[in-house]
Image 1 (cartoon, helix red, strand yellow):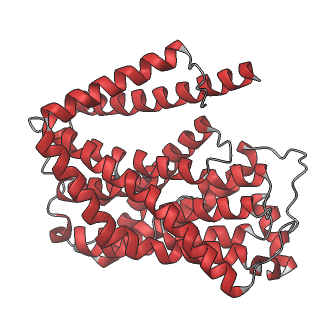
Image 2 (cartoon, one colour; image 1 turned 180 degrees about the vertical axis):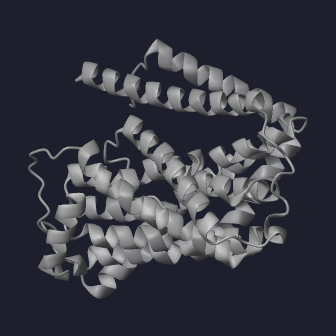
Length: 359
């Protein structure tokens, strides 16, 4: 017989409140919910799975096959000096920058599971190994949304620079601890065929989690748009929820500087994907969100500087300035985001407290 533990009253109130509000919104906006979910399904089929699935298989294969152990020893001296990380972190960084948001987290999870990195190293990389791939920034945002490939490359360059700056700072955010798990390869490398098959299976599971969250947030975004349709200046909040759909709206009214900043923050949907992939690692949530805000600020600042150095034709950004954000309305969006983050952080704290108490 299954025995369910009693959850704390405070957490129960949060859950009941959120569940009640969600049920009410589903009943009030059924068509919008369906439309948003359908958009999420199309986004997964047409964009996310084709672009991310191969990278997820590759990231798992690199770890399971054990080829990271062949990285030259001098790389270790470089990564330890700059990031206080082992040489295996080089693979995580490269896959993060080329594969897209959840690929870095997937690689970290695989390395941690296969004893290639310890807990401190995994936590440190989880703070900054979060980035959009070139396919998203250059092809989707630059070419498709902004109609300018050069701007896409500016967004990509801004992200790469901020990525390494935050990577350098991560060694000061999370200090080294003595742990029983070392960076030595305690798990035997798998054969090529076994590693490939297992990597495909793990990638399918990860994509399923990812797509489920994208569909859910697609419905949430559509309901939010319907609720705030009389306040068009609040459309930017969608990028705080789900970045892909958010960029579509931002590209119509806002400058590439704002888009770059939002891509640095990456959105709650991406954050939950990362938490799902790294559920075996206790990510410091407060530091995680500090890093997301810092990356957004760095991305936006660097993009602004590069666009002063490489000015574009006015026609490219002719849509910029159509809407001037109202500070009071923007505050509403910020409060909405802060409430979501606070509820999540408190729920994590309550869960840890209850777990320790039960032990």
